[in-house]
Image (tube, rainbow, N blue to C red; front, side, top):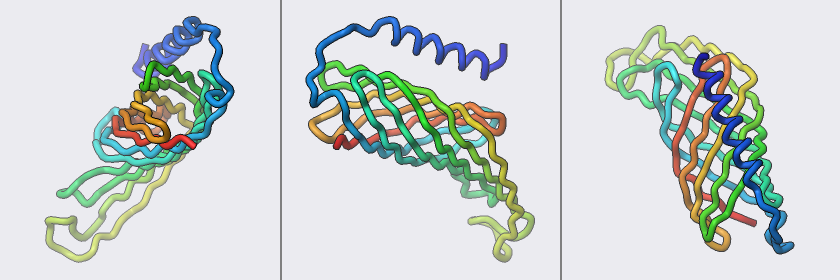
Length: 187
């Protein structure tokens, strides 16, 4: 089995475990339906190669243990000595499970989305530390359907939470993963 197949099997097993371990419990009305905004930033890389930084914004709607999320994440290469660079964009809708224990919130979800990868190749001119004129680029953009995954652990106060979040997008172009800090504001 290849990497993508193994990853999808692991994600499926995690959700199956979460689904079978849910207990029926009384949740007060004010805890049932909530909107949140999440700011994500972090470091990561593509499965075959480059590393970089990413940032994103997500809007979540939580209903009991379930949540729905729409997110936009941008990912870019960090390179001081090479003037070629790439940009990746991940726009996705995610469904997941959320568990709360004391002030900690644990979330995991997967979904479907749009993934675009743009590579800008320098064909003349210099980078930051090279001599020459302004660079000339050939821009190549490809898009595909992606299958995003996210998991987070957040320490939630009344309205504001701070935590760690993992984001990944499995697709046919360039699968990436990112680990970063997230700030969550609950309306």
